[in-house]
Image 1 (cartoon, rainbow, N blue to C red):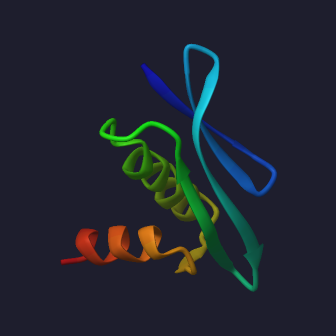
Image 2: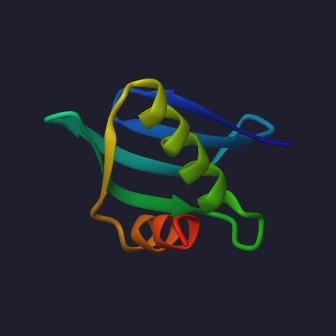
Length: 81
């Protein structure tokens, strides 16, 4: 099972103790700025799982999301349709 953990400026996805993906972000001016999304295993939905965690974190912290990363931008575009 893949789980996520938020650390300073990073959201990590791990499976059996191994990092399988991450999001790098910054917080500035009430925005969660998503810089990069990395999924080290394809076909497992890791990118979407990471973005789900980012969206939940932004809601908890009352932040808007600014996607610099193309994957994050496409994910958010699909989710708001």
